[in-house]
Image 1 (cartoon, one colour):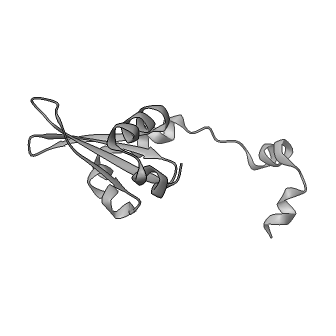
Image 2: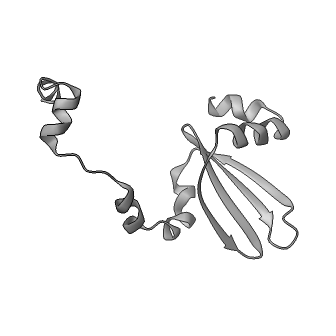
Image 3: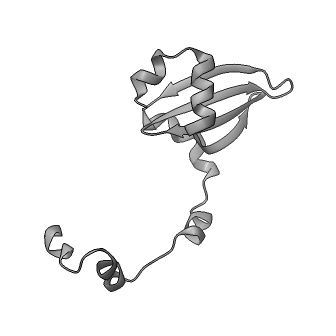
Length: 105
């Protein structure tokens, strides 16, 4: 699904795609609103809800990574590093192709 294809859909269809293919990246609260950030391919969708009623106030779609800034304080590198599995370089090339290192030069 491309960004332009997503934009051309009705909001109900966009929400359906978001449920099926979206990955929740982060959430935050600010000024009486709850913000949920999702990623679909190479673009993002931000849902903004009223904190008390959970009514959807706005659905913002964007590709610009500078709009991710408000979410950065919620991301802990410590938690990310716990989930990362490090593979020794020698094992990596054995798994892929021992000669693939030549293609990187």
